[in-house]
Image (cartoon, rainbow, N blue to C red):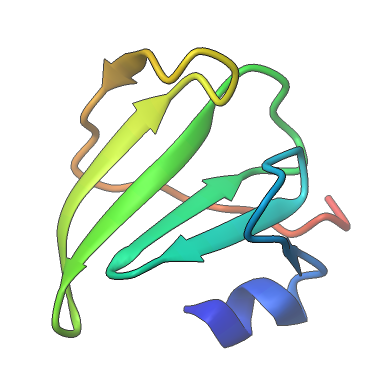
Length: 77
């Protein structure tokens, strides 16, 4: 997944979460899609399997929803 994000022009930045950036914290990846302004996704893993997906506000941390699946598009779209 990390390689696919980088190939899709996403940048890794473990400090600042902004559009087009993802960060990794242990077994959790937070992705702020380049085409979004107010929502990001938090994917929690257990080994190689996705345990949960949360849609949240990167500004406040408020959880919006827990979708079953998501699609992340490249920065090119």
